[in-house]
Length: 187
Length: 187
DNA sequence: GTTAGCATGTAAGGAGTTACATGATTTT
DNA sequence: AAAATCATGTAACTCCTTACATGCTAAC
Image (cartoon, rainbow over all chains, first blue to last red; front, side, top):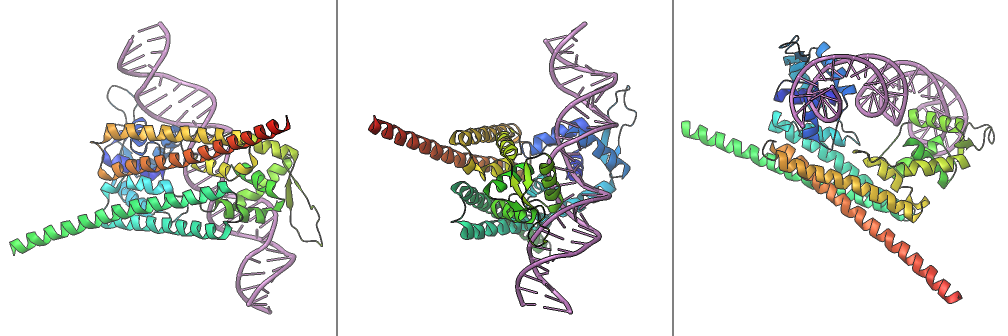
């Protein structure tokens, strides 16, 4: 997760650790944050693995600042990580982080990720529905409200995904049409 | 978190670890799950701290099953833990777990927890609003969609909380009125 | 010149997971 | 008798946090 975020942010431009944390806070704001205590060790690890490299090892006039850049190996690593979307129950943040880097992915990859996410949410919703039917009489009003609101929220998320999937599909078709038109004109 | 959940579930009735995990899955379903690898050590820890005790140390006809019961110290521990609600950014589950045990709390405690939760969500919403205004031009459509949907969901959660706070307040007033009526009749 | 923010790092610890190991009891 | 599932536990590991330590640079 952290590796994915670091590599994704560095694709946008080389930066040092401090900057990375600020950009992370800017983009993924209240959804996800990391502390320096995990960020700096992660950068060192990625560097030792060859996924990132230091741009200015002994820089400028002596100011100690480690600017990192993604290597080719890092780009590959990013691609692998981004498609490794967990079909997990509570990977809510995983999808958000991936979404923040959607612009770097192919439309097909984007649609694939969104559909996998949709399936997870659909399963969660079905699970809650079953639970509601089974335990309606046995649980207290607070737990009931929790379940109902959980279902509501999940379905709200599904509708959001559906809209995005739809928009993505439309964009793909649009691109295809333009390509076909151009082909037709040139033939 | 785990300690809170264990103590809360045991208030409902003494159980052994395996049962505890099943009850946890039943109530907090898709929101939160734990593995045996953390459940059993947690039970031992709580036992050594005197928060729970084993009911049938050498039970029945030899079947090795450790049934746990909450002690008085455990009840106190539960009360402390339940009010120790994190004002954290991403303690979404913390509130859900507490909500599942609301029936054991005083109405005032319930309202207090919900209002604290509301404040956290309000801050998150305001944060997202600010971010949206500040970065609208700079971020891509996916990140924008993420932020907008984040705001939507947060506000949906706030409305849900408002309804629950309202219902709780009405219940309190109703109880007070009944008490006053009784008092009036008896005087 | 001192406060605030920039910049990097380490050590210890928290809260869990996965994988493994073991054996009893119930169901088919 | 085999398969499922009940039941408990440990060891190693993951992924993060908090608290601490250090020093530089800009602003007031």
